[in-house]
Image (tube, rainbow, N blue to C red; front, top):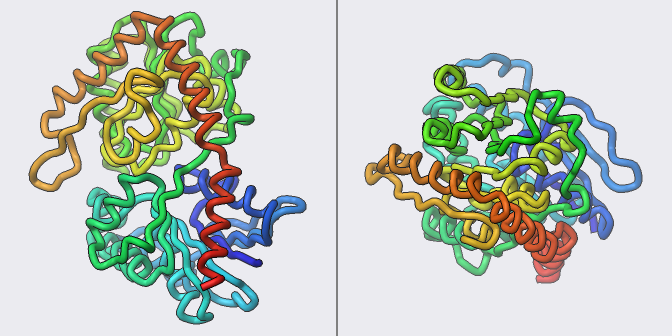
Length: 403
């Protein structure tokens, strides 16, 4: 069986959870079947003995940053990705960036199209800031065309499955299968070394509150910065945050960080993509990882922290409660959205204070934080292996091909 996986992100150009998912899933699947990855960006070397990797660039005629061009650039890559798939048994697309390519391949070659839904465009209205209103309309079009015709849709959480069937009510629920994300617990494990902390000026003797994520409305970083005003003064805040969606949100975060630094010390902002070993070490030494996301189908970052033995405080939204166990591996912060359709807390001040209250509870009780972290590590190891994700995914492929 030869399967072609379609993705925007693939190492070394990985900036989000979908890219992490594709990296590990494709590696595990390649131990079982023939896998080719088609991705965006510069040429890559194929991993020895496992995969074929092909990279594609947008059309030169679409170069530029005018509103809407980003979406057209992605669609031009999709056209190239969908070509020359003779001998392919099945295509599997990830995110709206490649969903259209999967749909076109299904039509062109008469092969099944599986798509994994890592998020839903109708639930991410802030994408209009990044893509422009017209570009956002195109991203919604790409997703809708693909999801309505896909032979199978993988939801990364039970909540994501419910969201899919709500946003696209005409879809037969039997086509939507829940296969959660995974974690490599051998790679993501507690690291006692301190060289990375020292390199970034982080004091290993002080309590550390950590955030890891892109600078986008979805990840809720602005609310964590508001919450930081209420954190215990002895704690240091480490922000591993980069890849801003827009210059406007980049400026907003920079202003908040500058103001916070003027009010208190111990704010370390690392605004670039870190190597994986760096993230693992930073997570391993954190007292708590905070995931203040406003929309999160599952949240791989929480699994990463848990696997490193770190307690997690996260928003009770999307698929996060399927990963973080309240009072066992961390704490969940209730999230009540605005009633006007804007994905934001109804009461931002109350949300920020609730985040800070739970963080402060673990700062004040490091033994409890350590206990929650140990339970998180155990849960990650026992319930979220990439091997099991790959086996379930392969089972879905075989089911479709045997119809």
